[in-house]
Length: 512
Image (cartoon, rainbow, N blue to C red; front, top):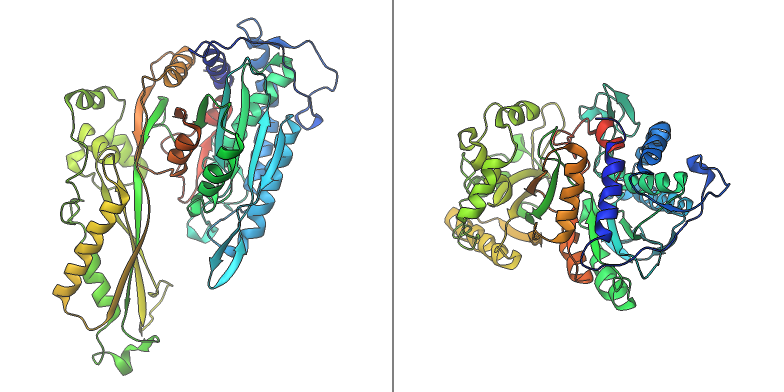
């Protein structure tokens, strides 16, 4: 497969969308050029991207892949870590950088203010949301594209082989924080537009863009912007489809299209035994220690096999149908390769493929994430923490409502706390987002499937994903239209982890 494959896929998806039931006809459209992409300022005749012009587009992508890598290098170099206020200026800088790139491909843009967030009692400005439009031909379908520009924290000392904010190419892989989540996929859309423009081929659809820089921190302020401002202003009135590229193939070789995500209910479990940290040599044995209480509570949440112990947590899970069961048997997934990729000693559910997929996608899971306030630095520390906060989450699935699950967890924790009989103070809070599913038989999905098969010579797996993208539901509700998740990265990209990467093949061929 050549490095041109996925620009073909993008062209096919765009052209297939034209043929959907909306039956919108095409008229010439020729956006402006820009020197940054090495496009000549001399205009050429606008023409539709047909099979006759596709080879020109493919050649153009091949000739410009180094410049596409360079753009990703620039993006990765901006440490847009949304969860740490000391990087807030970098988050804002990242949004402005992306705004410049959208303008370079001819889009009109606007930075929308979404207010402030309170951190340690101080109001901190949220990064603006970047909104853009390219094309407004009423005879064309309009696709709304969402992506995020912020990243998870990363330090070389965490276990990275190279500096996380310096893009490094090694063995046909591009390593760097944000390379696959989500800066690479976001840039993929720009490269597609660039390839059309560079060859004089006409974009067959209108495009709208929504790019934020707070997704990794709960998309604070975005829901209000979408529902209370953009929707009433008519931004979504002309939108026919919504597309998100913020997830991954199931494996490393076969493409997939995603029609479902789990939701998330994230908990902060706080126990306090004293107003300050204490010396264990002086106070040990004289106080009821908060850490002991917290460990007790967290140990009652899930058993060694991953079964959630919260009472009635599985009661509202959508029943497994015979039709759904059959879907899992045909999906290309190698449990042993999966185990080796993550370095696990043994997989749950005896490594049975169908059970692993079901428990990753359609059943809830509970994970313990960490303890705030406890000693974590290397070396011996004999402190007794005065207050500790345990962090855990439940991944939600269809038919589970966040409010229902929160109540079940709160009731269970309160019951276990009463059984513990500790005199310490305990409190628990939560923040949650719903699960999401879409109909994979919708014309939007079938258009993507046909285009993918044309390029990869295989039917893509129609998959669900274990992760969560809460804005998916908001975009669905704000637009009233079908939402498609079109992955660019591979299943071993290690998003959020050390040595995050995107394969050169996926990045260049995944221009979409």
